Length: 353
Image 1 (cartoon, rainbow, N blue to C red):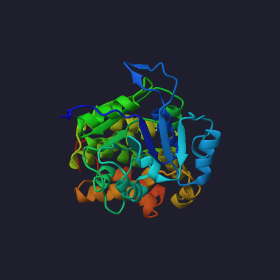
Image 2 (image 1 turned 180 degrees about the horizontal axis):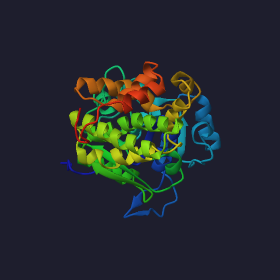
Image 3 (image 1 turned 135 degrees about the horizontal axis):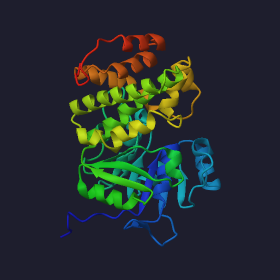
C-alpha cells in the first residue's frame, strides 16, 4: 500500500500567464533542483511549459528566449517552452496560476477538466474577484480540491526574481505534503519559500496591500512627504490586518512576508505597478487613462471595489481603502479624498472604527 504521507516529486511545471511575474516564476521553476541550500550539479534545467494567449509572446519565448513585452532584458532558459495550447500545461506535474485575478475563473474552469486530481495548483495572482468578492483560493476551490490548492505570495518583484536576486516568499497550503512537495521543487538559494497552512491570511495580505500601495503612490504623486507615506503604510497595514482577521486569516501570517513584507516592498517603489498607478493619480491623471496606457494589470485598481465591499460586509471601517475605491471607481477628486482622510476625528490608534 502506498504511503499517503509520501511527498510527491515534481519534475515539470506549467505556468498559466506569460506576463512579467509568470515569466519570472517560469525562470525559477526551470532551475535545476536545489538540495541542502545548494543548486544541483546538473546543468540541465527542468521542463517548464508557459501558456500565453498572444502568439507573438509564444514566438518570442520559443524563438528568441525572451519576453521583451513584459520582462525586457532577461534571457530565458532554453527549457522554457511557450504554448497557446492549455492542454500542454495541464499535463505538467504542478501548475503555477499567474493569470490576473479578474480573469482567473475562466482559465481555471478551462483547465480543470484536463488536469489530474493530484496536480498541485499554485495560485500566484494577488487579487479578489470583483463580482463574487471571493479570494482566488475560493474561486479555485470550485474546480479543485483543497489539498491541491496552494498560494504563493510575498515581497517579490519580477525583475529581481528573474535575475536571481535573493527573495523570500510565503507558500501556503492546507495539505503539508503538497506544500513540502512544491517547496522542494521550486525552492532555490535565491528563492526561499516559507511554509504556512494559513491560505486566507496569505491571500488577503497580497490582495489588500495592492490597494494600500496605490494610496502610498498618491501621497508621492502629490508630494506630501515621506512622513505621510509612512503614516499611510502603517494605518493601511492596520486596515489589512483587521479585514484579514475578520475573514479568518491569522495575524502572524499577515505580519510576515505575504502581508507586512509585501506591503513594505510595494508601498515605496516605482517598480510596483500599483504604487506607480497611485503616483500617476496623484499627479492628476485619471484612472481610465492610466489603465488604458498599460499592458500589464494593476491588481489594486481591480480589487479596490471588492475590498471596500468586503469591509462593508464585515462591518469594518477602512478609510484608506475606501478612499482609493472612491477615487478609482466613483471619480472622487484626489484632493477631496485627502481632505476627507485628514478631517477624520482624532481617536485611539488601536480603535477599530
